Image (tube, rainbow, N blue to C red; front, side, top):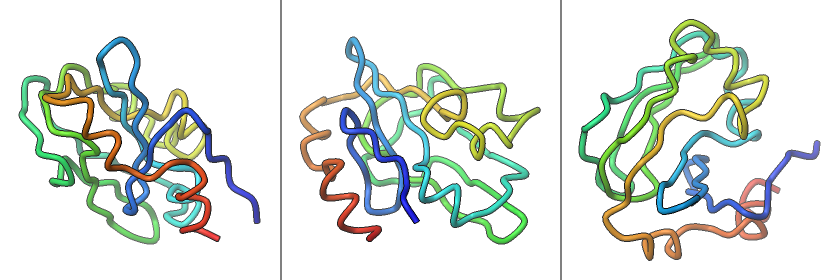
Length: 127
């Protein structure tokens, strides 16, 4: 099976993606992760203003099959949360790289993105 792995993003081994745009890092879970989880029924996210540490837990995604912790790709402050997921958690399944995004972080250091997997490295991991 082939999964979408956009080149412009960076990835954690735990299947979160990060996309830096204008100094803000948008975060979600990968196409592979949502497929493994099955139908997402609940997403628990931090509050705006919360401080996150790179690779520290920031929330939980719950599906009909499993509950999985979510990990931050970079350290920084949460500046936005995708409130749509509270009423429509299935957006994570329908569009994991678009409408299913989870939060945005004002990073302490964008160089932390260099520590993450490239698209090619992530594709090797899930192969």
